[in-house]
Length: 443
RNA sequence: GACCCCAUUGUGUAGUGGUUAGCACCCCACCCUUUCAAGGUGGUAGCACGGGUUCGAAUCCCGUUGGGGUCGCCA
Image 1 (cartoon, rainbow, N blue to C red):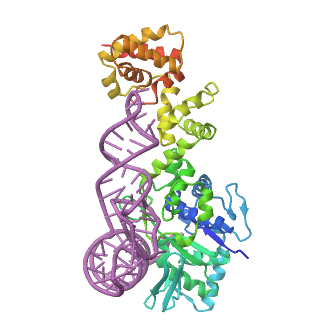
Image 2 (tube, rainbow, N blue to C red):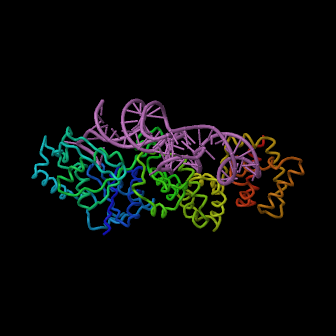
Image 3 (cartoon, rainbow, N blue to C red):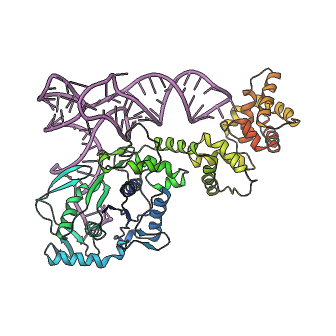
């Protein structure tokens, strides 16, 4: 009988931490690899933190990453699984029963209005699937609170009770919990249950080398959701923090990770979060998307940036996106690069104007305008030929025309290839923008 | 401070007693080129240190140093 049951048990704090996302990912990978069950449990015992909005963020994050759960609350308000409830706030009866049991067995006692667990004074060995045998001398350990004065149960209690009640077989969690594990083992034993196996995964460190926290840039998954990252890229990157395929390959489909994922191969050392590498990886994924795949993403990015995509002729957005996608690494950048194609007014960068719309540039634009006005053909290759012959006639390089034209039509000195840009903009708009630039910047 | 974990270029990793220590990101150079990217080629940079074990250690053991984590009526 296959009995792997793992869980992701986040606390609804209003955001999903990348470390949490990676923990969820590893749990999910292990569940899928073993054909086991992935449970989502919401640890909302701290009433101050509990809100529907905060839970929503967790759902959104997991769904965005493609991490589906077999048991737990669902975004539509329904519940899947018969080992619930999956909100700790709805499980107080279960905790009360556990508390009473511990009290009856004299494994817990009241003190100052709270209830403390009677920690066994002995050596406790954690047999961790990743860290190996880790010994703790608990002979001097203090008893600790498992129910607050206000009657609410504390993490150490509820976490263990729920893992027991829900039949969790493996607890895969951050290494910051390793030191808590003797407590958890002791509670499980006092309750007469069989504790799950533990697997403590290394922490994700921030740029300066300490545990990534809420305040760190890039710590929240929403930054990637909103920043135009592709979920498959973020997921791929997260796989690499503490785990690898071991064959000099870093870009791989999730199915492959799922097939190859083993707890024993997870590292024991912490990993620093490298935003540059994630950015590179995202660009790599972005470029590998075919037109059919990238369009929905691009439309979403454009829409949420305030550019309705429906108002344009069919195919126009796609043309723009395909032109621009080779040059950008995120959806956010894609939007930036697409702007000149979607706005009436050209926004001029002052540095670009200064550099290329000087008297020489304006002269070049005048020559180009005259030449282009009666161009019979307006295609990318025709434009290219025209630019070249223009340069030849005037005994200069094609650059003389290219740069001022890019600035005049897009406002910037960098951008996609010029001829396709001019083609997509269309002759009318291009001529209009050339005239406009000449009027505005000729002095 | 006590306890626990960790240690291969700046970063992520491969490497499990014998390798010119491999790959990727970053950085640099060159090529390509209308800009910027992408792509291609090449380059800089690493086994923290000290003891052992061994014919032979990045690999095994011990210590030191360094980094991280935990010590809440937070989770």
